[in-house]
Length: 148
Image (cartoon, rainbow, N blue to C red; front, side):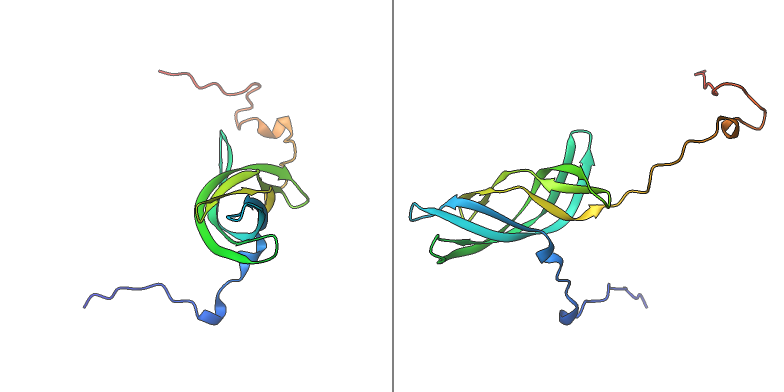
């Protein structure tokens, strides 16, 4: 008999509430012609660091409201956006650059915001004593590898 192992399901009561860790705000031109506001949060999926810079991928969810507080709608969109890495006490913190997000067919100007958690890096290694770097044979200089 073949047995297929499934991942255990999470209970509804044990759902993580980390969605509120990455709040953002922004403004947009409301359907009535006034300036509306958005408050939302980012559900972080990944932070990628490549030679061109840092990028954050996640799901942006927000409530669009008129200036008087009337709810226009709630929408979400998955996207990848550029970020800047800034050093803080714990390591590096990703800060989303100002961007435009399209929700419900409305272009929203999102203000810059920091992404939690910070990227924790180990402390820089201490300088190594030159004598300890020498090989067992006591070579004086760096080892050279020559192609054949």
